[in-house]
Length: 291
Image (cartoon, rainbow, N blue to C red; front, side, top):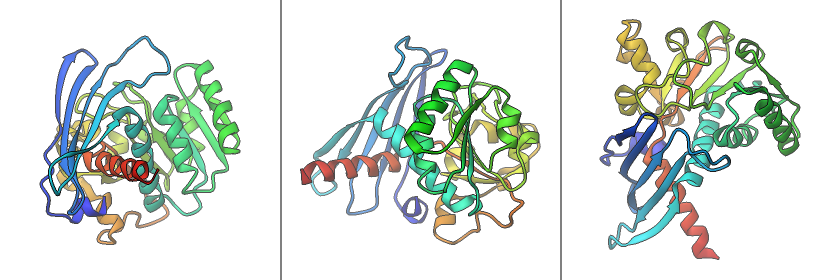
């Protein structure tokens, strides 16, 4: 993301084609900085597949060799997306959360929730994991699994307010079309990763949290085009484009401060960018060659 922000390569916005309510087809082309490759992620995202345990995102990441234009790697987009999204949130959390932040609240209990728990645990010494989901059984099962995997005490709660009020770090990784996290619930000094909504329309947080936060984008251009929560607050006349204080790359480069005080509510809006997918595919490919 440092290279994405600093680089001079053209990075087109993704193309999303609605197929049916809740069902999407998406094409995301892009290129890494030289001498690395270029390519695209091509996926479908279906709201209800009636096959528990399978990813809602299916497709491929295709990486081309810059030197001769040949296909270097074709990787499973679902697995790459699960891992790189959580890794990006962990990088943002490390840059933006208070050093002493230790209580993680996760809204959702799907594949992204699982990788986020594992990733955030790598950048902060967690003392507790709090899980909220609409299904109590699912939340409780997830908490048991998370505690076993991380060694961190985990519990399920059915009140979203309580989950937020007890947390220093919050990740929303749901498929909700309406807010599951409200600004009035979030304590000063918290860090929030907003991950679940990847296109204009569905929102996981309310306008109050957008307005009250120090808003950091993975890509400023992408948020202005498709960041649903930001666009809702903007349409309501509550903010303007300058409310995006930085891209995460600018924070990582030391160009803009991510957190300015212990009282800031820092917010990282993750839409995901194809450079992350291509870098991940390149890493997988290099490991495969070594083997």
